[in-house]
Image (cartoon, rainbow, N blue to C red; front, side, top):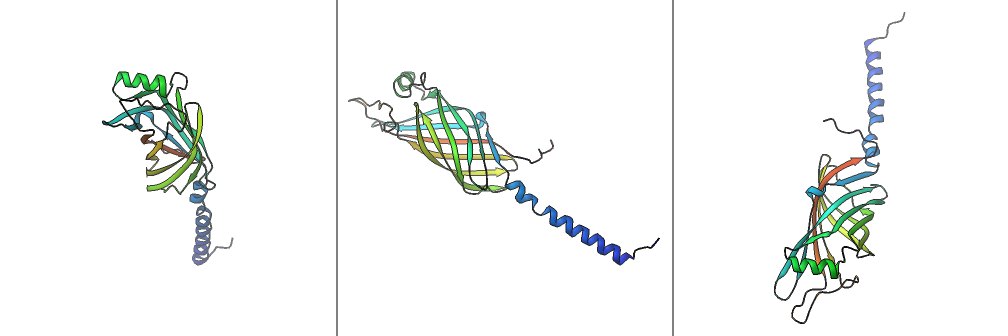
Length: 209
């Protein structure tokens, strides 16, 4: 049997290591190219609304039922739904809230407010803060409206936090303005949302616990 010299064996070892390293290099980009799903936690989600009138500003809230967004980081194509319970809207004033649900939101007839993402713009960083935009359809009071949300996103491991603000011109969108000759309110509502959840990547191994 012919013995290989240590130099020759070392060369084979180095060649094998280089080949293995070259094979492993594409893996991060391959993982990053897989669809990413963001699942939001309703218990960690805060939805607040603000409506101004001539006397003071009214503050209120809604509760999220569920939220899940899946997107392709290469094409930006997105799907999923963020569902808000319209019947949960409240401002702390029973008479005012009763009027809001009966005459404006008609929440018994339209019990859900839904945002359906269609496209994500911007890159989600592996860690830290990213600024992305999500284009989608906002469904409220039985009608669909195009809406683009700007979201600062904070990622740590598979945990994620995001927030956004936008305006709902409810009167222009077919809902009743509750103003009277004694009380005038704005014809638009400011919405603020902050939420937390976790990210999963298609094809990626689940972290050990």
